[in-house]
Length: 183
Image 1 (tube, rainbow, N blue to C red):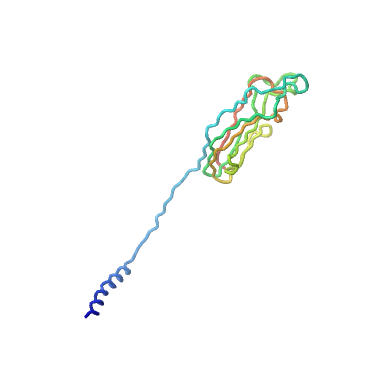
Image 2: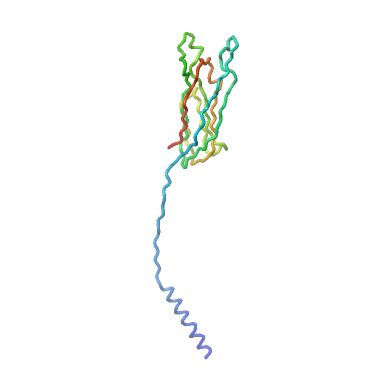
């Protein structure tokens, strides 16, 4: 009698397990998507003012030429793109706002001052550096290899060797444009 009870108790469990395995299942795939638009941002830049430039005031062959070798004005600006964008710098030489170089000795003087702008990542790795020298070109573009986010260093320099003529007196101005954008 003991054997019969054990078999009878085990039989209902076996029937339940067989019934559960026999039920069919169904499934569906659920596609999920989102879009992130291409975007770049550049923090506000501080205007650059080189102040009063030093010139040689002594008489002789170097009279009235710029002295020193270089003046720099550096700043940091967050530079970010979520795709491989171009970095572009555009700029013309600074122009004298007070007078034009039209005098009889115009070959010794200039009414323009050249400058350089370097735009680079602060760690030297996050994006390719762009360098503009207005003595050579008015625009430079560097295509980047991927997305980037960096507190970049932007240095503007006035270099004596880029300005070999005597600058006319006056105020010199220019507007350079730094652009992040599509490739």
